[in-house]
Length: 115
Length: 110
Image (cartoon, rainbow over all chains, first blue to last red; front, side, top):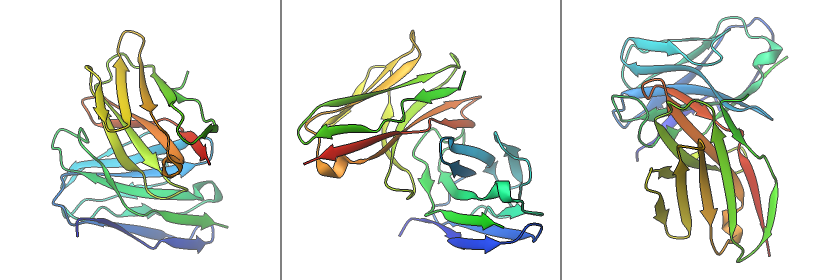
């Protein structure tokens, strides 16, 4: 089954404790992206990757890191989480080399709470 | 001004009604446009792409007006199952920059 998976789905952590949210897709997509969704602000792009070893900042990259060592995986790293990073996070992938000109497939989301 | 603006609603409509949403965008160089549907904090799913010539998929019609910089979504004969949040998505910057509107919430009432 074609899908985007994220782990963990729910996470409660404390300020400053490094964490990684994994994202994996099995559709051989070039484009992958991370978003956060907050009430009243909608989905905002954190980082995106056009292909392996190619990553770029989105609108809200501060406090986040990403890597794209393999085509299928695009982990999101919070080196020192803070309460303002409490949010619902979505990973997405798309097949178009030029960018997500076609359907973006989203993972189920990761609900993160930073105390 | 926000890059992509939507009326958050909620729009409460009776079953069978026709409802329309608009979404305005500020970057005249924007290249691609989409409507996504999101159910209750679940993942967004593509509803339809929006083409310059307009396009229709069953009860759903999407239109793009480049001159006035807005896209629209028309839903005819609303069903209870259409209750969701509808997200406007705009691509720009060589198709790499993805901007979502905050979404318009639709509640179809029996």
